[in-house]
Image (cartoon, rainbow, N blue to C red; front, side, top):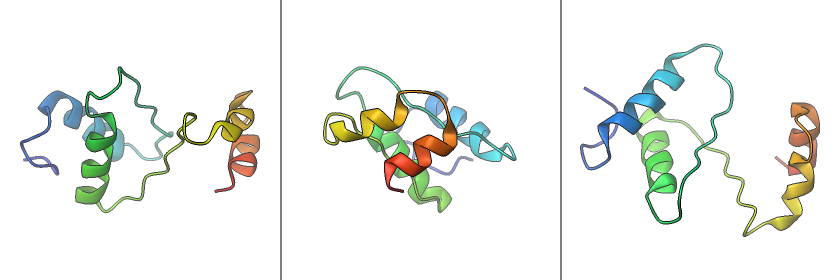
Length: 82
């Protein structure tokens, strides 16, 4: 049995459960069309798993785009203000 209630699609929850079980695991990027449940999926999974997600929303915080202008994780972390 998974960590998240049956209201969310099992396939997507399975991907997150597999990701969480890997040690160490890399950050995860959830992409998709607007209003399809991406944020809900992650919030519910994080809540059930006792995790604290870090959300980067370029629409609400366009100044964070600079942090992701290259793929250097140290630069991303320092520029993001986390």
